[in-house]
Amino acid sequence: MRFAAVLNQDGGTLRTIDIAAFSERIRQTLEATGHSVQVDIVAGREVAAALEKAIARRNVDVVLAGGGDGTISTAAALLMNKKKALAILPAGTMNLFARGLSIPQTLDAALKSFADGQVMAVDMATANGQPFVHQFSIGMHARMVQLREKMDFASRLGKIHASVRAAWATIKRPPALRVSLTVGKAEIVTRTTGIGISNNLFGEGHLPYADNPAGGVLGIYVSVARKRHHLAQLLLDMLRGRWRQSAHIEVHQADKVVLKIHSPTRKFSAVMDGELIRLERETTIEIHPGALNVLVPASNTQAKAA
Image (cartoon, rainbow, N blue to C red):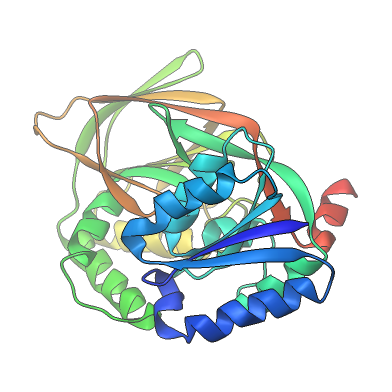
């Protein structure tokens, strides 16, 4: 296969490694198994343009993207409904979309898995037409990300520590939103501390990512927790993958959901694939089955076939 690699030198763990040496390992690993590759190392502000150029090349089969959640989400959005495949180097903090694709969680192991990888089609989702690969959320998650972005950290562990501090601060002063959700023919009107809508249902017993990235449904998670200890328990349930057993969350699924905000506050934020965005009063979230081709370890496609 013919690869075009775009590495965000400012993104995720790529900031902390010798990226030139890693670029050379990319060439050696892929070329040793008969592939060809062109590697571009770019600054964060140049990632979108570099990805667009890589995708526009006629002689490219796979776009290999390396960086944080923003880099991967941008690459997936640009490749949505295109024949070219996306290969993900897991350089983010949690790499949840990559985990759902069974991609190894170290850079070199992921790279080696691509050498004999296979292409499969997985789902994407959109919020008012804007694509995402993992999750769209409001309420507590958005507040946590807002607080975390005000903190200083320079490493993956630093970001995790900042996330814990932001989570505790949010639990102490949780947001409360009046919303309505139209799920199929049903309308849910509620006051909630948070809602998450995922690209496919999260699996059980692990971090929040989809076991089946081609399941064709949105996972809809509505927090019913109010008290601090209930919110803390909900956070633990989320990290341990105990969504369905939790008494503090309602789980629904659909191929489309319409979210309306009825709270009087003028400005709202949402988090989409880890990035803060402005939240509209009304948001339509939809699943798009098979909209993204991805390169995954051969063992993953064999497991799906079985």
